[in-house]
Length: 119
Image (cartoon, rainbow, N blue to C red):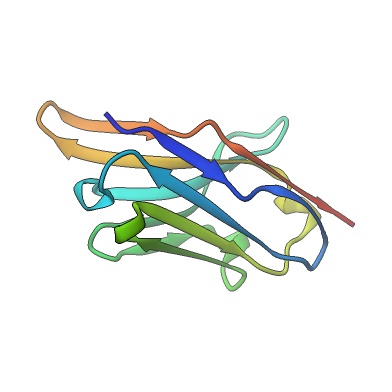
């Protein structure tokens, strides 16, 4: 069982920046992978960035060079630094956690945080 709480969303102008935070209810050292997804109205939820417990990182092509995912194990928190924001980045951003243990794989999702980028 993992509870995820996102924060840091808001309204910014194009070219601005935000940092999203996702705090887990348990040590992220026990979580195999965490990531950020986003969903805009009328679109499917898509991967933004993903970081494994071993350090493997993946980014969507649309955010490469602009977004950075990182984690702080001591704070049980994963961050998404978003720079050079564009209007097309507007979406609800969701934190995701994957834990593989007894019973197999389990996925957990946060409630989402709204990011709106104005032109």
